Image 1 (cartoon, helix red, strand yellow):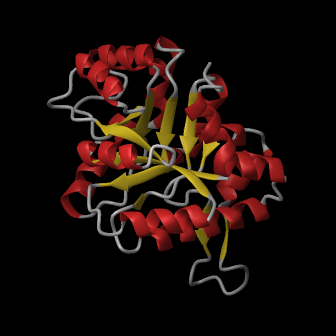
Image 2 (tube, rainbow, N blue to C red):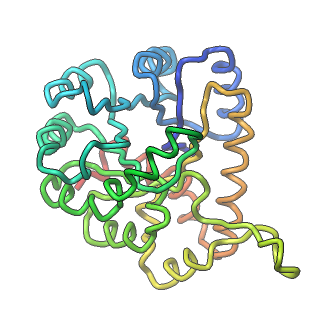
Length: 270
């Protein structure tokens, strides 16, 4: 059983049915999707057992009251990125309060990178300090019943992300954009081509990584032709990391799907 907690979908239906069939054949039982809100909801209505729609939050237009409407329409969570102020600004707390009240999951982009290119990527870099994983601290303390997921394991602030998982029962992180592994540099002649990042290894063996809080994510774009190859690559990279860490089967199963299933089922809510 696999669950991908980080999937973009913008409504291009040309590949949707084919991709979903292929992914189910690879053991994926659920995909958390966000992007074009109407398209995600429509796709989820056609595939209610497989697709879990999240709202792509609009900082200019969306209001706290809108969260109630999104919940009634069937959205299970909200994806936050590029805030106008730091995530933990008190001006945003009314939004988080409505998410908590509606039992919705808050998924925060917490990295200096993304799969986007050009001007959008430049915006992400420019506002990266407003999206650091440490900013989840105040939110988690203020809303202890709000399930919080940070995206991309907080890259490059891995230790900061791990600290959030350690101190807050309601904080988790996804591993999207293959955060657990790296490739051997060209100037190094010996060693494996791909392996677990040394920093991740140290956090894992020190007990700081908290694998029971990690969620598999691919960051694939579901309506692109190469979507399935993207997720295949992500699975291979995670397999490499788990092998290098000699992770037990139970931990592997939890990272690939068990942890996410419990979050989506509500059985891991604090």
